[in-house]
Image (tube, rainbow, N blue to C red; front, side, top):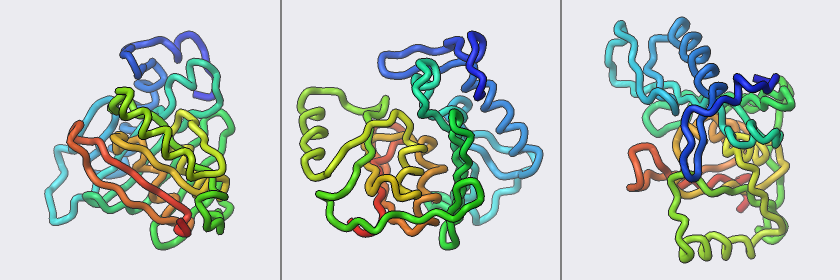
Length: 231
């Protein structure tokens, strides 16, 4: 995926605020193949939805893999270096562990809730900044969001609290910025769970905090607020 070419950037789906390309589908096939070979757990993927192994036996556990094969597809097409591969292991709505791969830089972020988080196998920690006025907010405008003038005005009004605001176009990498101390807050409304499933465990493993709850926009949309734990 690091080598962008006309084939990898071939558009399969183009909507008003979203795009799906060949690289999405190719990465998803490889990830699903690997996870299915090494695990019998169900998989929820952005492109293919929910999948269960025929040999999977239902237990009290609701463990499942949640996959976003290419978070930041438009960035990838445009050559904006903010695209990631995100994989998370969750038990129902409880994050367990996560992995995010920064496609353009080749950095690998990983984290285990209650243990630690790493960037390229070196431990990372959230920042110690306490005041919102000294903090960097990473945010965005998910495809399922309301783009009305009223909603956008409310969205922008939040910016006044923070020292700086960054819209990176990749939720998974935004969360990695919080985990590694480059930013203090990540906040999005109506974000799809696969966009954040890999990154949230990494922030938690690095000492941060997260709150999230389902919204009524779709089955998989959430309002998410993640911080360094000092906000």
